[in-house]
Image 1: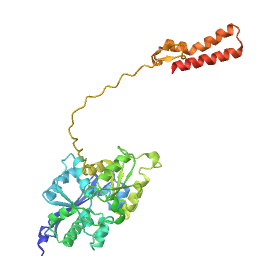
Image 2: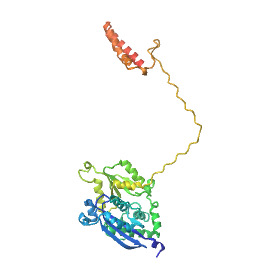
Image 3: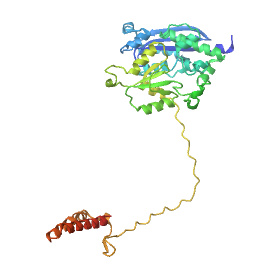
Image 4: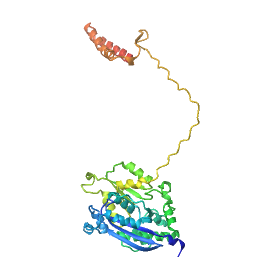
Length: 382
C-alpha cells in the first residue's frame, strides 16, 4: 500500500431537498472512509415540515408520504454532528454544505464549522476535460466507472467519496495535500477564456450563474458579486448553466405560473442529469460573502511641501450700465434691481406708447417709440 493511502480518512455527505429552499432537507446520507476504503454508512429520511415540489419529487422520488413519520432535522442533528465532527467532510459541489448550514440555522442551532472539501473542485484540478464543465456527480462517476443510484443521498455520498479517492490515486497525494489542491488555481484553461479568467479561488469559481425573479438587490450588483466570487454570469439557462439563483417571482411576468421560464427550464435540465443547482437569493448571498474583496491600491504619499497661503479672489468689479454714451449711469448693477423697479421698467414702454396715443401721434411713430423704449429697457436689464 502506498504511504499516502493511509491518510485518506474522511466522511462524505449528501442531502436531498423537498423544494428549492436549500434548508428543506428530506434525506441525509453519510459514507465514512478510513485508510482509502469505505468503512461505514448512515442514512435517514427527514421531515422538512414544508411542501414537496413536483420537480424535486421527480428527481429523488421522495414524497410527503415517505417522511410523514420521519424525524425533523433538529432531532437528527446531534447524530450528524457525531459522525462529521473532527473529520474532513466531503461533498460534491457546495450545495450540500449550504443546505446543512441553512438547516441548522432554521432549526435554531449553531451552524457547524466542519472542514469541508469539495470533490468537484478536486476533479476540476485533476482531469482537463472536467476543468470547465461536465464535473457533475453523474458524468464524473460514469467516466470513472463508479456505479451508483443517482439522487439517493447515501448513494451520492458514497460516489462522492469514491471520486475523491480516484483523484487522490491519480495525484498520489495524501488527504492534506488534496485539500490544498482544491484551493489552487485550475491548471487547465481554454485559450478563448484566457483574457477574462474569473477568480479561481472564489466560492463560485468556474460556475455559470443565471438570475431569475425579483431580487432584493439590483441585477447589476448581484452579477458583480457573482463575478467577484469567481462565477461567469449568463442571461439565459443553457446546458452550461451550473447555478440558478431564484428571487421573488412576479406572477405578471410568468403568465400566472409559480415559476419563471428560467426556473422551469433549469429543473428540466436537472431532471435530465445536468449538474445545475437551484438556490434562493439568501443562499446566494451566503456564498458570495466568502468571496475575496478586490484589493484597493494604497495611494502613494505625496511629498510634503510648504503650504501656500490661499489666494483670495479679487472682488468682482461692478460694471455700470448706461442707456447710451451721453446719458450717464442709470442702474449701477442690473442684478440688484428690486422687484418694484423691475416691474416698472418692464411696463414703462406700454405706458409711453399709451401717452403718445393720447397726444395724437401717428401709429408709425408710436411703434417706433415703443421699439426704441423696448431696446432701451432690454439694454438696461443686461
